[in-house]
Image (cartoon, rainbow, N blue to C red; front, top):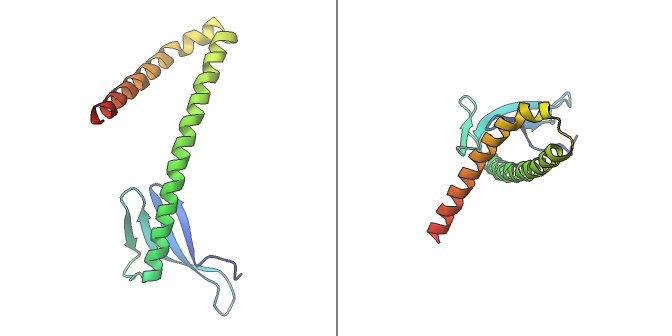
Length: 132
């Protein structure tokens, strides 16, 4: 059991519940003591109850928050690249496989979504160009 980390982070919406892992007890059972709740989006660390977090606790939590933010950013970019693939596959489907009834079902929704996306991308590009 010595390979277990000192802290366990139960991921939840916008952050995690933080537990200190303890295996150094009489029964040699794994005990998890909740020490904090964190919000990654706001950068908040809230101690659980009346608990005072040690410097080691805060350091581990901040390191996890930094790693978590990097992971979420990487996942966001992966999702976008998958969306591009999805658009390409949708184009191929519409051109080669889709029936008239299938196209009737999705055309308006796709056109509105693509128009909205195009408008945002064009506006954001113009904003970036103006900043330069």
